[in-house]
Image (cartoon, rainbow, N blue to C red):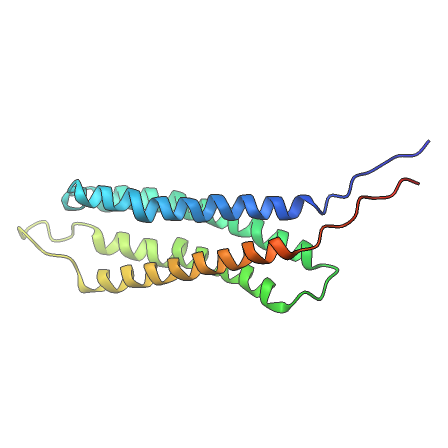
Length: 167
């Protein structure tokens, strides 16, 4: 009696592609649909916007961390027996680093600046540091999407192993 086991390696490219698709697609929807809609609706002028924004971005940041870990794990698994290039592993590690900066750097800093600490003044305005933080955020978004697309292109070139031959 022969026990046939399927090769689990072909699952990694599909899982990485799915994770990158969910992650990058979610980022584009959040950046290009959700946030502009909230801005146009005037929600940014509401007193509770900083807390609501923090909750939305914090939840998405934690999802990003999970997806980045999955992408990094998959890339490392695919590179295990190949000398495919250090850049691919570094790119996946860079995506994880971006997610960490979002979760533990930019999002808490933006939420802290957005809190209504000037409740005595009628219009305190937006802190200048907020513009710098938004610029940093969108620069990292462009970098994240670019690196993600490069990884997707790399995945398209990964040779698929031949099916296991029966014994």
